[in-house]
Image 1 (cartoon, helix red, strand yellow):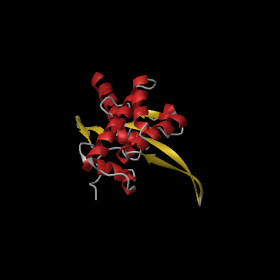
Image 2 (spheres, one colour):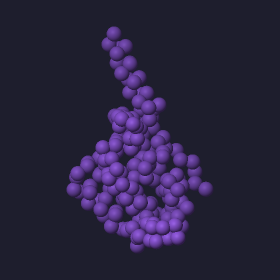
Image 3 (tube, helix red, strand yellow):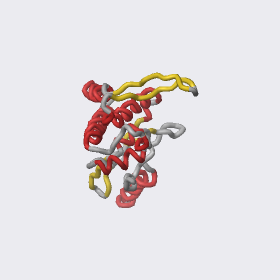
Image 4 (cartoon, one colour):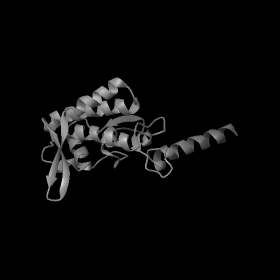
Length: 182
């Protein structure tokens, strides 16, 4: 049984959730994926631990970290050809197989090496987000935050990973600056 997920923001689409395995707490940079134990937590948080192909082991960790680095570059530098090439490198390790099942048409991800599976699924999810609403893929606006989110607000103006944490810090800072100047 994996340990509880310590991250401050969970539940984002898979690609952004992978990016959010790095965060800042009290000024210290933290990383969930420093070993197979953290990978087990991330796999469980995203329901990937039920897929028998995916293991929380060193090869899967190495390839998931490669996918995270590629996604971070692509999200932080949209349109950058080197970042796109890094994501394409990850995507080159899997494919979608079309199937006809008793329930109807289906798709299944296939991997020559299953250790690429979790990272490949995250990269594939990023492509889906780009198809859906690329302008809604956001980094938190707080200067000390490194988290990312998919803005699902009605008007698309969400700025913070969490209004209770980063949004509140920004409001408190503005209030302090106003009262200090008075």
